[in-house]
Image (cartoon, rainbow, N blue to C red; front, side):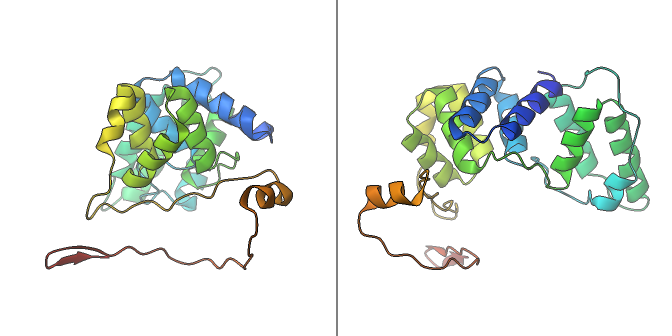
Length: 228
């Protein structure tokens, strides 16, 4: 599938504030992808690449500008492969090599695709598709119960990988995800509600407290081996 299709879906998701519409847009896209493409696109629409930042900072992106292409031609796996190559550029002259690689990629992208890729690389893809929405969309696309999809993602700690497995194997893939020593369990997501009154109606008596950001830590132990 062309990158332009993903960019268009991202734009539509950004333009709506309706949760169900966001879920529907993403689910419809996921159903049209190959398993390999699913893993890539779930990463992208969650705001990150499979490769991470890996040395592609603001300076490299700033100095890698190129005139946009007139028509869309880049496909999803091709972009992912180019980002993979980019992530392994190291050593003397690596900054210049990264700029050249990225400039080559951006030179084949339309202006909308260029904006999407650069926002993705600097962590600035703000479209309101948080993890909870992505899991809802994955459940709809795969036809599996949302609770099962959430549990699989929590056990694996890797939603893109789970997405690929579920859309490739269906319900049979769920058996692969369970509590395993030395496999971190992903934090459980809070269940969203449209407003405070609805939340209190669902929960009954409740206590509120200020939320402080911090680090979540798990300690795993098997015999004499301990990992934090």
